[in-house]
Length: 194
Image 1 (cartoon, rainbow, N blue to C red):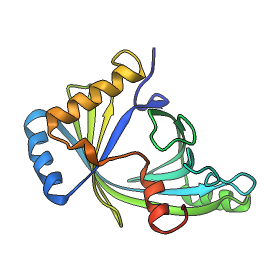
Image 2 (spheres, rainbow, N blue to C red):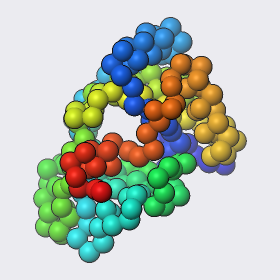
Image 3 (cartoon, helix red, strand yellow):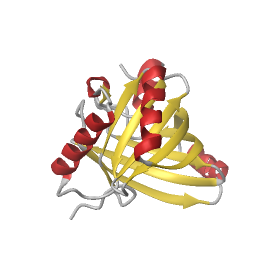
Image 4 (cartoon, rainbow, N blue to C red):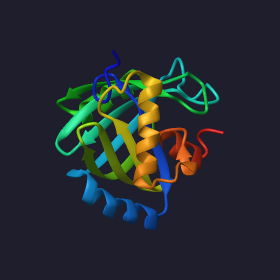
């Protein structure tokens, strides 16, 4: 049995949308899903001194310090399949830390260097305790919709299938699906990744 969302394996799709599409989907969600919260989030991504996460053509591992209100979280993410343009799922490990600033100092002391900080405003909706829909505005990148499984629909492929079906029901145009995460997009925009 696969443990989905917030249980070490994450199955989701991310779609780039215009502001107009973003607002249209938001209105639809108000009628079919439960609004949960709006948060300001900042995720600072780091690289290793002895083995760079940026070496592969398609980086597939990240370590970050995530700030969620007054909480700080150390996060590690590994995408599958490794070094592939499109990923199907990822391992995701989170540990809450008391002091993000001290953790950043530790990282600096052991030669981990900061790559980028992804700053976002996220509006979270829940559909039947099965799917989480995140409406994201990412500084420097724009508007995105993330659709993530909150449960196992019968394995990774069946879960991905359900997410794609839901995105169609919601009216999300998956032709603008983003195959990489926000840190990758931001690093590419800044020329850190070719």
